[in-house]
Length: 111
Image (cartoon, rainbow, N blue to C red; front, side, top):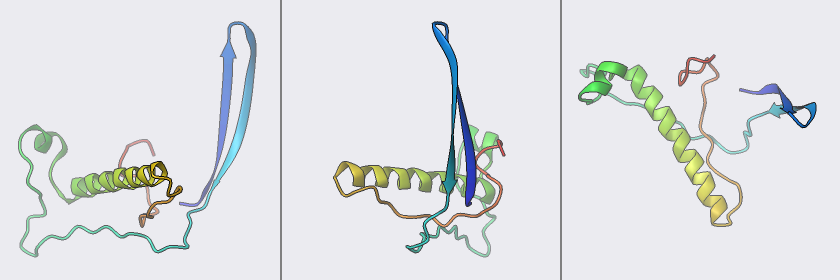
């Protein structure tokens, strides 16, 4: 989601005077390359659940909502890993772009 974020930093230590500083980060997603779309497919007669045994199934569930969360997190991790490996092998800071929903976050409850 395009946004402007104001970051404010306060520093204090016992031997020096307190200091504060701030920066403004203006985020605008690059749209010059087509994004990678993720999809979850299931059959018409599927109950909409994936195979999961034991405690994770009882604590988290195994429905489509949880599958979306897990797929999204895995995609972010692969995106991060790919970007880091490209940079490590001196190919520049580049990676693929994921198509993102501009809705409330579903990975955490901090929104």
